[in-house]
Image (cartoon, each protein chain N blue to C red):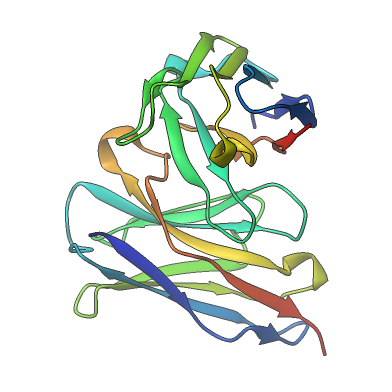
Length: 108
Length: 121
């Protein structure tokens, strides 16, 4: 089982600032099978990024994903008010699909 | 517009069986392009994949839950279902159903709104 560790647990930023979220895997992720989701209170997660860097349909280009192997990053270039939420990373592919514990991006 | 909707009891007694159904609208559950999955989220915690099913009935389960889980599909009703046996307080969570593209196995591109299941006597 691949364990995903997200950091930081909480990120306090202001609108317009850049957010950098980390997701570290306990072992190398095959073919960069790493996804990111955004979740707002009381809502289901929304797919943002898959394949480590491919944006899902309708996702603004201020969201970008990068990384390979065991270290992955989600970057939000300029935070909009609607971007304050919890972000989850997920490993998928051949083996057990697992999620990180989430990073909360809150308004400073 | 693809939509998924979970339904089922919001309260289950310890040791009993949790049963939920996901109704798919705006698309066919018989499409060869998708798996259909269940994911849960305990209050204040992270997400956990429970299992997935293909329209043919092929299933894939999280090994940690496999002994207690059954996922089935009813193509005539455009629904798939989850049964989790012998529940405990640790099974209390918001349960989501989701669509998983066959070409990118494991990602969840459409989700239901989720349903909270409480385990209590």
